[in-house]
Image (cartoon, rainbow, N blue to C red; front, top):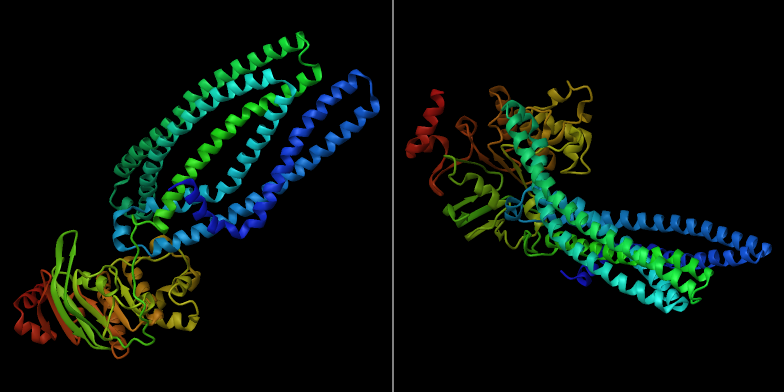
Length: 573
């Protein structure tokens, strides 16, 4: 991505702060003028002191004092404008990036670790938001230094030529440094993404790590990753150190040569003392243009790199998005059908021509060995993946034609390991339905057999339950997810082995809750325990990606030997 394209992309999110940007630019122009004028006035003071002109000395002193006070005020205004531009741009870009991450296809999420997205949401976006102010600052200072350079040309052409030659040498060193550093920076960011992802997993899985007594192996792995990151960071620093030494050496040669040249020109009468003072005051500013040019190149290259990483997710093809149709169903009844559906995951055939039809308010269970394709059916129905061939319809409409809300807004999936957010119990419920009442929340928790437990907590429904529901047991997390689904009140509810971690007593309550819901919802259940689905209207037995048998519990005991075998094995346990 070119710098021009990067600027266009980012400006879309920063243009609302255009007024602050204009004030910031004018502010820096005024600072440039003051920076040029003050050294000239300071040099004039030397002449006034030499000529004993007391009035002019006092007057110019007050003028310089006033200009410095004004410059400090300008710096405060510039800093304020910069903070506003940074804060608002950061918020907008992060919001859009977060929205696009939520729209990524399942394949995009699966192929990339969380570190990829965390780093781009934080570090890269921060660099983009800060870029306009930083670039403006560098450009302003470069313009100032060029103005000073032009002033030196007016004062003495030999000093102008000398400074010009040395600036060219210093700029060449700085350009090589920036290019070398950028290569190392790219490698560092890639390694840092992996480490961030690993740290995220470590924090989320801290309880399991302790239970597995795996602290030592995790710390060994973390140390390896941190060493890798630090090595990449050291290489970046070593590039800077090497070229900074070279740059500093040439800068010392420049300072010595300039002093020798000034003394020679004063000795020959080609330069006055006042002009010599102006040149010495300006000399540091003139060579600093090289630092600013190097800094600008650094910022521009970092800006391009960050922009490409951020907008690869927002607009690029590297991270495919979920695609939905445009047909909206105002009212979903709950009928759906699979018609000769085939699906493969990474070249492995999972479903091999599955067909079935489910009517509204019907309760259907899916049974089969692990890997038979049960969860895949749920994922396809929710459009987490698209079928390879065949068709899935909801109320007679192909789901590829339906919009996001018609599918996801009418289907709730309760998984084996539901994710519970680091919020209060009440706020977890309100995530799925903003306007839900406290009474509805409590009723849902009662149906999910969670209300009694919640009332034993000191803060009740306002208890913070930790990231991933770390403060809840496995069964409590599943009941929490069931309550969340009941709050949402979608037409279709999918239970993906959602009762597998529940004790027998709680499981009986959940079965009763499902029984109470049967007349109102279309319910699909993937069952680990066959005893939980014997009252289902229908049971579909899957084997190796195909439907081997279908019927009620009693019918399958007679017609499906594999089902009977599984059921009898469970009874013996």
